[in-house]
Amino acid sequence: MLDFLGSLQRTHMCGQLRAEQDGQPVVLMGWVNRRRDHGNLIFLDVRDRTGITQVVLDKEVSSEAHAKAEAARSEYVVAVKGKVRRRGAGLDNPNMPTGQIEVVASELLLLNEAKTPPFSPADEAIANEEVRLKYRYLDLRRPPMQANFALRSRVAMAIRNYLVEQGFLEIETPFMTRSTPEGARDYLVPSRVHAGSFYALPQSPQIFKQILMISGFDRYFQIARCFRDEDLRADRQPEFTQIDLEMTFPRQETVFRVVEGFLTAAFGTAGIHLTSPFVQMTYDEAIKNYGIDKPDMRLPAMVDLSSELTPELREALKIEQNLPVLGFAIPNAANLSGTQFKALVAEVRSFLGDSGLDYLDTSRLKSSPRFAPLEELIVQKLRAAYLAFLETASRGAKDDDLLVGVITPKLGTPPKWNHDPQWIYKRVGALRLELAKKYADKHKLFEQTGTAADFKFVWVTDFPMYEWDEETKTWNAAHHPFTSPHEEDIKAGRLTSDKGAVRALAYDIVLNGTELGSGSIRIHRKDVQAEIFRSLGMSDAEAKERFGFFLDALEYGTPPHGGIALGLDRIVMILAGATSLREVIAFPKTARAIDLMVDAPTPVSDAQLRELHLRIAARS
Ligand code: ASP
Image (tube, rainbow, N blue to C red; front, side, top):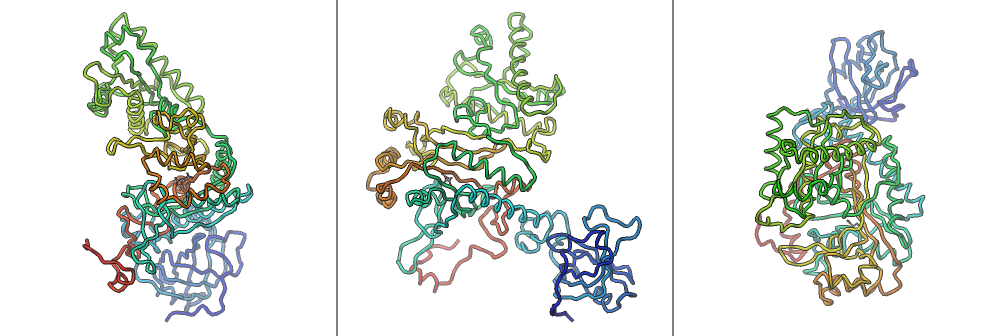
């Protein structure tokens, strides 16, 4: 009953035909998206990746083709020979690019049948993601998914083209290698030939790209797969793709300009015209102004109100004398009823919890003639910062649409965070984001307008070199251990004397409050590298054991170098307007690291285990 394709060739794709082709003979091939049976007339919507064309099977034109259409069902694969016809008056479908025409079939080939699918690719939204992932091939047939992967391909190509134009060489690095220090767990591959030994899948190409610089390649890039066995969060995948690059003799700004260039090219493919250079700020500035190292610049910054709160006022309100008092504005959110406002204050207080911080009730100032002018000053200062923000955000606002949320530490027993001012900035910063989320409908600053204004990029520089781990009481590398500290900090001996004050030549690129990528200028001298390993609590013997090959390589004329890596999946997700990485990865894993389509991971046979010299201690 099925037909053979024979020598038939398609002339057009299903999204291609327009009124201009009226009368033209065509051959289309694709899937039956929908079928509507009106007796002597059957309509098949035939779909391929470019779109859908309505095909008409008229018993009077060909009863044979009409009979086949009667047998056709959703997702059957068909070939249609016929003629383009302008649709009759009033029958155009303005929602379809091909909506002005239809194809009148003279011949229909049923090339393959399909079981009744668990969901129809023609459906707009499919609620059950597990079913989508199990039948991924059906899910991927859906037009929005086809659009995501077409976008992904264009974005990757634009990035490749840009980097190649800038003199970068694309070089592959191994998947089967040894542990790389990105701070996650490794996926291991047992060796059959070397009993008891394992390869590790790379958490990133970090060491290899540095060795490529030592090898004289000058500028390297790779759209590279990375593997990290982390506890999965909603928006993580065990394998993901980075745009990874490295260059010799760079200043930080050299790296920034390259990244801005390829991002501009990538966003251009989605019709978004970015302007560069992007805003740049230090880690300290980010913490002071936004309370976080990945500031969401779509919202106004925090405002330091410390100087408005005079010593007498602090005394009267029982506010600590020497700690910062911070405020922020949430645009358009002032319009609250008395009850709503009370609920908000309660919510703020519960958010701050037992941290020792509190909501600053400016109405208390108003009722005192002594402090009333200060209340005005505080409100004015917040308003000024807000208006300045509006200017850069170029969005309109009303005069009275300002929420004042001001926080001040209470006097009393020192809270457990021990009066660390950074902690206050971070806490207030988190509250700022929380309230911005809560009032998103009012301020609308997260709404997509389809222009470059939706995308607020910022470079954050000068990260601390070390992070103190309270649990293990050790210093860890905040980026990775190949990151160079600031030269002055090395010269001043801070690596040993004052680790907390050492700044790294490390940088992040942040978009709308999400880290898109990070990189650094690297250490290129063996003595400095050895010193850093030591300062991270790694003995010389251990460093030699783990990174001996790399320390050796550093001794053969290593040029200054630096680079960065950005998450490709995330960039495509943002450009596609998707909310999950799984929408832009063809065969993703679930939050429990399972591939539901191929059903992986799975146990393997005892014979395979034996070959690999492995025995399973306990099966879960
Ligand atoms: N290898 C780093 C990472 O994966 C990026 C870099 O430093 O270039 O985060």
